Image (cartoon, rainbow, N blue to C red; front, side):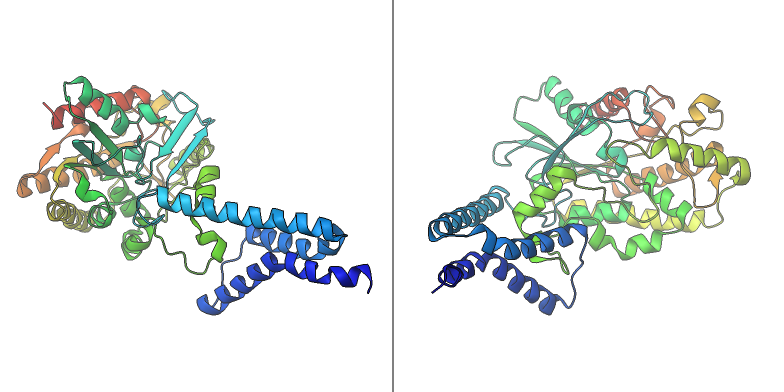
Amino acid sequence: MTASGSLRGWWLLASIPALVHFALFAWNVISDGYLIFGRLDLVVLSLFLLYLFLIPFLIRSRRVAIGWITVLILLVASLSGANVIASYWIPQPYFSNYPWPPMKRVRDVVGNLPGVQGPIEFSINRWGLRGPEFSPDISAQRILCVGGSTTECLYVTDPRSWPWRMETILQQKGIKCPLFVGNAGRSGQIAAQHAFLIRNYVATEKFEWIVVMCGINDLGALLHGNRREREASIAQDTLFYQQRPHEAYYRRLTLWRMGETILDVGNPTAGGQIIQDPAGKWIDKFRASRREKLAKNGIDERPAHLAADLIDYRRDLLSVVEAARLRGTQLLLVTQPTMWRADLPKELDELLWEQTDDAAYTTRVLAEMMAEYNKVLIEVAKEAGTRYLDLANQLPADTTVFYDDCHFNDSGCDKVAEAIAKALHP
C-alpha cells in the first residue's frame, strides 16, 4: 500500500468539518429556499474549499495527521464552548426583541460637529440598551429612554449622552437607591415604532418610568413621503430579532453575531433617513447638498398634507400612552427641540442638512412644522393625563445645544439631562 493510500482515511477524517459545513449549507438552502450570499459568505466558502484542497499537502504522515486532527477537535470544541457561554451570558436569546445587539465600539468623529469631542464610545449592555451593565434585581429605580437619533446620541460618547448623563444627575440630586437609566433610542424611528418597542421589548416591564422624545422623525416621514412604508415595516425595523431567515447557518450563531457587532454593528435606519455612519463622514456632503437645493428649489410653504399627517401622529402618540399603561410604567413625553428658526444666522444655517430628494425647506417653515408636532404631543399628554416636558421651549437654538438641525452636542446633552431629570425628580 502506498503512503497516500494509507493516509486516505486520515484525510477523510480531517475533511469532516468541511463536509459538515457543506451539509449544513445545503440544508440551509433546502429549508429556506434561498440564501442571502454576500462577499463574506464567499470568503467562508473559499476558505473551506481551499482547506479541502490543501489536506493532502498538509497531512503527509500519520503523526502529522494525529496532531492536525487533535488541533481541529480542540478548535471546534473551543468555538462551540464559546458560543454556548456567549448565549448563556445574554439573558434572552440573542437579538430577540432587543433595541440593539450587545456591543462596544470606539470611533473618532471626523465630521464637522461643533461641541462634540472624541473619541466616541458607544456601548450596548447585555439588555440591548445603551448604558452601563445593570441588574434588575439590584437597581431599585429604572428609567427607559425611547426615541430616535436625538435620544440615541450616536456622536456623543457614552457618559456624555443625555440618558447616561441623566443617571449621574439624578444620583447627585439625592437618590440613594441603585439607579439605572437605559437608552433604547435608534436613528430614524417614528412614534409608531416607539409604541411597538414599549409593547414588545422584553425588559420594558422592568422599568418604572419611560421617557419618550419624539416628533422629528415623524416630520421627516412627512417630508420624505414615506410614512406608509415605515408603518408597513414596523415589526421588522424596530427591534432586532432572533430569527434571521435566508442567511447561512453560521450567521445565526451567537458568537458570529457578537463578532459582527464588535467590529461594526452597522446603522439600522428607516427608508429615506440619513445613514449616520460612526465617523460622521456623511454630514458635510449633506450640508452642501442642502445648500444647493435651497438655491435651486427652496420651499417656503407647508406641504398640503401636513394636517393629515398630524392626525396620524396624534394616533401614534396615543398608542405610545396606551402601550406604557399596558406595561405598567409611568410615562414622560418630551417635545423635540431643534435649531430651526426664522432668523437663523447664516453660519448656523450652514450646519443644517435636512432636505428631501429634490428640494429643501427653509428654516422658517421647518420651525413652524416642528412646532405643530410638538403642539400635538402636549395636547395628547394633557388629554391622557400623562406627564410631559416642553423641552423645545427651554433650550437655545444654537451651537451651545446642537451640532446640526436637531442633534445634541456635549453641552446640549447636559442641558437635556438636567431638564428631564428635573421633570422626573423635582
